Amino acid sequence: MAIMNVKALTFDVFGTVVDWRSSLIREGEALGKAKRLSVDWAKFADAWRGLYQPAMDEVRSGRRPWTKLDDLHRESLDKLLAQFGIKGFTEAEIDHLNRAWHRLDPWPDSVPGLTRLKRKFVLATLSNGNVALIVNMAKYGGLPWDAVLGAEVARYYKPQPECYRTTAALLGLAPGECMMVAAHNGDLGHASEVGLRTAFVPRPNEHGPGSNRDVTPARQWDVVAKDFQDLATQLGC
Image (cartoon, rainbow, N blue to C red; front, side, top):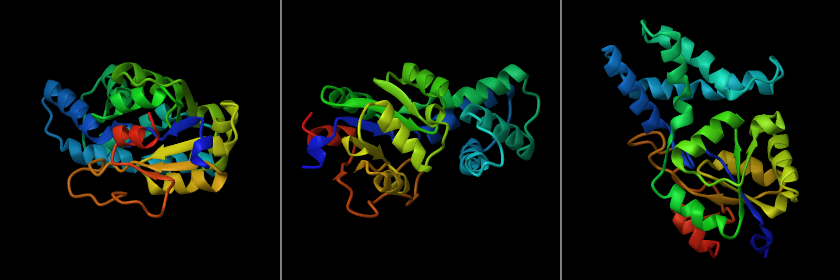
């Protein structure tokens, strides 16, 4: 009965909707080839993602004022270019590489699955990505969002509860009328604590071959689906 009350699906984006790792590797390899660089771009992508949470922690803790993810990504990128000994990029090339996060490829089932889900539900992002990043990614990948919400709009980064509550409120809904869709058990756990319903859609390849991170549900979520097409079927779309 609780699921019957759901009116909106709110989505984690990085990893759940788009394949950030393969996309960053692709972008790095293209730029590296043009500049004749020999770089382990898989290692570079993992290191960049590895700085994601620590950078946001500085904002969550109040040690620094609100800073959008594009700017946090750029600060992390500057550190990594030095760490990997990568030189010779122009400012325009560095900015282009930073905006690789705007050009992440959707998983194969994402667009067709979201298109089905959109027939019945409001689809909104509940991502730590800033608005311009998520909008550009949607244009690039054909992602059919009804609303781009989440961290920048709420001025709180997940998993701070205000991020989830504000997203629901801006949709004019109670938390229980929203279902958080994510490939990450932790994200769902925090959403559940605020009152959102939960759908787990694992992405076994998110962190590359052989990773066992978030490949199985950590507990009994409201829905567990193998992909977005399966989620649409289970939700009657």
